[in-house]
Amino acid sequence: KKRYTIAVLPGDGIGNEVIPVAVEALRLAGSLEGLELNFEELPIGGVALDLMGVPLPEETLKRAKQSDAVLLGAVGWPKWDDGPKHLKPITGLLQLRAGLEVFSNLRPIRVFPQLIGSTCLRQETVRGVDLMIIRELTGGIYNGNPRGFTTNEKGEEVGFTTESYSTSEVDHIARVAFEIAKQRRGKLCSVDKAAILEGSMVWRKHVTKMASEYPEVEVTHLLIDTAAMDLIRHPQQFDIILTGVMFGDILSDLAAVIPGSVGLLPSASLGDSGPGIFEPVHGSAPKHYGKDTANPLASILSAVMLLRYGLKEEKAAKRLEEAVFDVLDRGFRTRDIHTTGTILVGCKRMGKEILASLNARVFAT
Ligand code: IPM
Ligand code: MN
Image 1 (tube, rainbow, N blue to C red):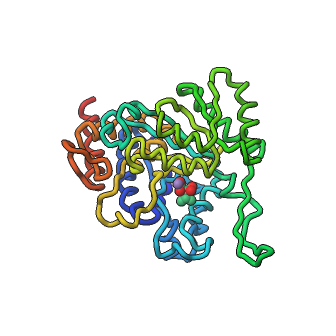
Image 2: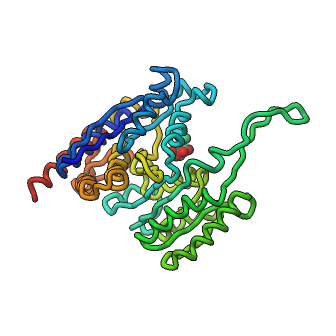
Image 3: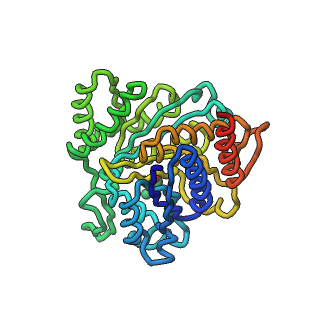
């Protein structure tokens, strides 16, 4: 029997509703494929600030590093919103990404046929969309230096952050994107602001250079503003969107309107080696917390990515992914994706139906 240790970091708010559901789904999907998954729960974010006064306790980072994969919920809680940066829940997440050196952030956006009615765009515009945003995660403006606060000649307060991308940083993330593009439809669109930003100029130059190593991949470049418009007007044209940390952050929330809910979007953050972080794209949603209304599918689909990209257990990944399709086929919907004629359920019930689908397949085969 293969054994794996999964570090479970539910974090704040609805992270504590969706992650337990994803853990049970993961446990069952794994065990049906003969895997023994051991889950170790660790604090991060506001919960960690409450418990130990820091957003990422040393112990959490240490154990995350020793694990085979990290399943994370969300961080952020109003109580901690106005504090200094080192006491913000999201600082814990940024430190975890840096500590695990997960430089590539994979964010697939798919329109499932069962959920075509959940989009607020035209159905014919989004039907069949299957794209992946590949976002650089540990460099760029989020991690730029110098940065800080200063005073200008007029005595005003000034905040500043540097945006930079180096050859090696661009090559590192571009390599990931080209390799994935090769296994998909072979189309890669690189998004930058090369008309203005120096980091983007280096980015475009080196993506173009690498393209010559991949004749089978069709490469295009878009400026971020045009990309934002095209993503919503003609999303079907995209396969891989390769971009930096900030543009990728914005585009992935924007892309959530294509399937209709951010509650459907999973992500994987990977390094060259060591455990990856698998987390829903959505946040802690304080307003929705405690009502059992959150959609656990983004977390369950993150668990699918954990099995696929983290543990390389494709069979278990497929099994769990098919359970998601089955639950959608049977008509179960959380509030964010509910349409007339479907069955409105809460977070826990959605989880139970996933387990039922997983179990039903055992009897069917
Ligand atoms: C995301 C989030 C994070 C980011 C925040 C919480 C730091 O918005 O994962 O998209 O900007 O990377
Ligand atoms: Mn974001």
